[in-house]
Image (cartoon, rainbow, N blue to C red; front, side, top):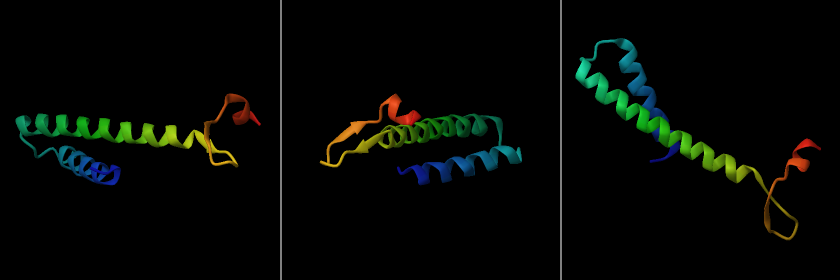
Length: 72
C-alpha cells in the first residue's frame, strides 16, 4: 500500500469516527485499523526522511549528510 493510499484510507476512517454514528464495536475496529495505517504512514515518512538525509557526491557515491554540513 502506498503512502497516499494509506493516508486516504486513514482520512476516511477519521471522518466516519468523527461523525459519531458508528456502533462502539465497529468504532474500536476502525480505530485499530486507523492506528495501523498511521504507523504505516509514519514508517514510510521515516524511510523517506532517511533517504533525504543523504546527498549524492560528484562521483555518484551516496554519503550521509553530517551535522557540520547541516549548519553551514
